[in-house]
Length: 254
Length: 369
Image 1 (cartoon, helix red, strand yellow):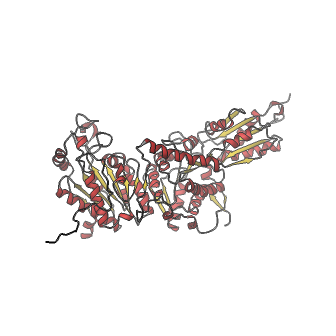
Image 2 (cartoon, chains in turn brown, purple):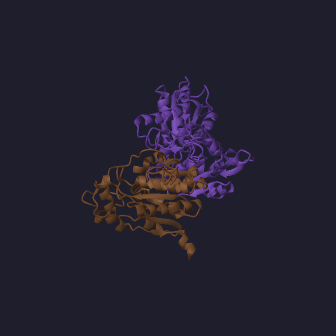
Image 3 (cartoon, rainbow over the protein chains, first blue to last red):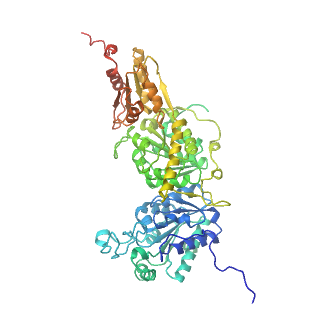
């Protein structure tokens, strides 16, 4: 048998060769890679700009190998709107956490989606504020303990976690909204397909797209990486169902 | 091009188009909503972008993103809206991007009122957002000057890669005056993003461009901030603009005033001149960089006994006038606020109070007993 030099696995061109600052067991790295693979596959790296949020992934531009911009906390959708309106020929994505997107940036995400801005949002939901040290997020689960709700989220006091994919899918404006996860190889493959489809829709100038990715935060959850993936499956998935909520293809199929 | 009669807000909008602006983002607020109503029709005519955002917070950040393309972009708003844009202004300054902001000032604080004021001087000149930064601030006193400064604002924003703010009081936005625009294709002043190394145009055959204001290493952040300070130092050297009106060795008093208020002072100066009382006007046009040396030079002249600062506020620019003069002459202040524009009679009465008694002008001639 002759030796083959065909690479079956390598670093995506849209990623830099570097070590990330993310904690062991955090799934940001996996999600970064999926985004980079999708950009490679649609051949968009050299006409893409990413918009980094405020949060753990604020330094995303140190890992992606494409133009990048850093927005104010929660304002990435407004930032991306301004950019994409002036450069509709480019591929634009925001990469946002749950505090950034579902709390301080709620107005910006809802209105960008409602205007049908032709960019893609990668929404990383790990049910906690990561970078600031594990405070309660709008997505923190009922009873989940954090540094600002040490006895667990009290829904009588602060209400229930917000389901962003469901919320945005109520908008009449066409959009592609899907929730995925990356805690098992099978889920990673599905997540990759959703992310690639989102960028494909954008490249076709079809609609706004948001992929919500359920993510782990072992450090702030106080769990080992393995326990964290189990907790995500057991606690997060029942509240945040993994499914596609809205797809422009459905309308076209009717 | 012929002179045409135009409302200030619309003239400002047209000036921006002719300056090569390709993106306008806005949120409605009195007394400047005519800008948006004009541009919603005008921008598509020149292939530009018009977008009404969901809030001034969003609009400021849309501009941050839009400026990252390397194209000329701007907004107009009024005081409470400008307050909401301070977040983005701080980021845009920190990221060294060119954006033009227009504040058609209304009376504050809070919701305040919708009538003209100059009470956002501190916000514009002293930094309304967080961090060590400055805006280059321009203040027109006529509609024609608003047009000219609007065009200049885009050039200065590009020259310094810094946000520029034009502050006009509500009067400038609302009144109609004859204006003239430069001839030619409005698109000729557009810039080419590909020529600007800092613009995010896609990492094709070059390293990625990163536009940011975050520098976790304090030495790196200090370097960025000091680099900005060097720009401000260059502005202080090269961009000071002002106008002298009837300044002469006969002046007994020097008025410092800007915007609409300066025009009212000119009326007063003309009237008093006819009556034999000589007063000069120093009108700053750049509020930052402030014409400190120039005001000091005029105030120190032997014939000037007193300097009178007149504003539509409770006294904001006056602090910079005092700082400029360094105690060489007494500085008095007169102002009205809340949306009240002082009448020439009020200003005249303040001027006459400050003129030396022996030269005191007899207002009615009936005071002599």
